[in-house]
Length: 253
Image (cartoon, rainbow, N blue to C red):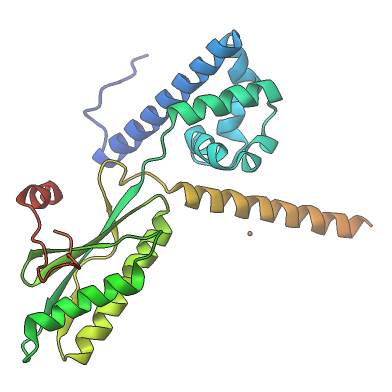
């Protein structure tokens, strides 16, 4: 029997998906190996005890997703697997060392034009108003001019969904101010993650998914029980910074 192991006959989408799964599995095995070394236990025993359960019992697409959630909220994962306190302690310490939570850089593009008397001042006021109304100690949005009339707004955050909501909030403020000056606002792209972790699922989304699953399970148990008895804009000067050429090339790539 001949099995073709080459990549030639694979579709690009299938190949990308397989590579992602392989990279995740490789990371999981690195973590399991380090835990086994700390416990001085054969790695096969750890997989048999609770390693495979991370793949099968936790409700995520991959064991690595379960590990990322466990690092933030252990109660969403560990009750679903048969793991001892000693093993749990070693696993968590390894996760905190091996899994760094990279922030998301989220960007949205838009264009602004104003042919009235206020012109550039109207655009500047729209951007500054958005920055003043949306930015606080937690959120720092940056506005940059790509090339007139094109602009972008970026935010760096660990919570992807909240970051996207903040960008949308800023766009609403800009749109409101431009309307006052009879200027034109056009959103050219929706919020998009840029950088190396653009395809990585937000941990907050994974946690919400796990919490919803647990809520459904609790609801089912309760029902069953009842039957028996969820470039920066500079606020300190009058200029809007132009985007560096390197950044624009990076976006095109």
